[in-house]
Picture 1 (cartoon, rainbow, N blue to C red):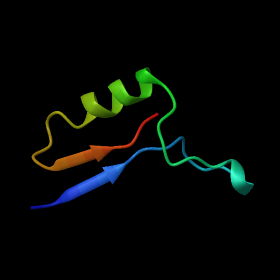
Picture 2: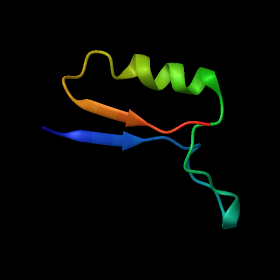
Picture 3: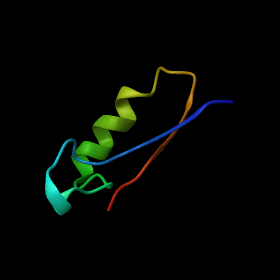
Picture 4: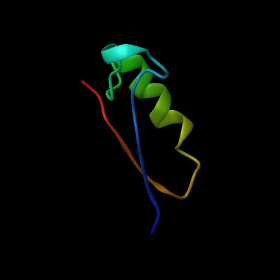
Length: 46
């Protein structure tokens, strides 16, 4: 079993980086993009 965990807003500088997805639309797009893949995914959001 392979589990991938993801989230966040991408590259950031300094201490302003976040490990959570900040908006519902980004979470929706991540979920849609993994629908066809036979893997387990975990996404972090706030």
